[in-house]
Length: 343
Ligand code: RBF
Image 1 (cartoon, helix red, strand yellow):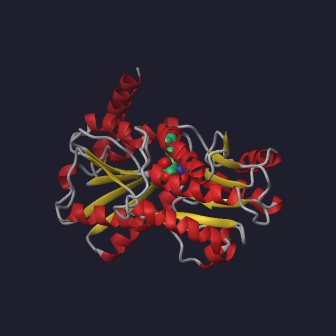
Image 2: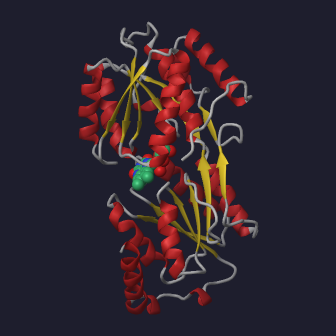
């Protein structure tokens, strides 16, 4: 049903608009034309911000690269149609995106535009010769952030209470979140103390900061003293509550130490900007391989922890930092055994 709709829609697009746009044949051979397709809004979502920065920086360094950033907004039901419209003129050599749900949409669209190539990070999809994916091992990032949250909730830090409960606020449910991110976070916390409980809530939006603030407040009432989130811009609501009522935060993917003075206890890092620049350089050199998915994590150098920010040192006592850094070393060198659940 959905596919029939897509086919009809694309025929419509081709007939009524495609002819006026530049065709693939007219595309200049010396120019690499890139569409960065943002599945949401760039601002407030680190994975998208880093993707856009990487593509723009690469274009800044290479005169024969054109980058168009397109924000598809928060209505997920419209993403496929928007992407189809964007590629229908054959203007772009590649579409770059970063979202676990994108490859399936690309596969649908790719059937109608067999020359279109798609490169998607933060996603897993193999066997389609038009699509290349890179999957960050988010279980690993969750595992060490969860361990840190566990050390904090069981500590005597000023805002830590006697309840061993940590909080996870998610914008929505999706397989990468429920099968790897949340399990990694709780597994890491229980590595610090097996009695730790997780209070997990879903906002139902990547933009509703007010709802995130309310949820965070209810979670604090139930004893949560350390938060994390995968919620894009909506996470600002959780941060607001943490600041108003005094709770700690550990955060994914980017440096957020300055968002809540004294309270951001740790930030992971996703080397998405570096990856995007490497991808574009591979495409330019004709080295890009399609049809495969690659898993990248802490050992490959694409996920890590920001320990060199003064706030990290200021916000955490030395005893916790020492334990945490020893854990990170063990993780990097393979001394800690864990199984990443399948997607
Ligand atoms: N992450 C964001 O930071 N902002 C978003 O707006 C956003 N939208 C998403 C929509 C869908 C349908 C899915 C499956 C994931 C989305 N993510 C978003 C999550 C993102 O791709 C990534 O998994 C997390 O940021 C963890 O690295």
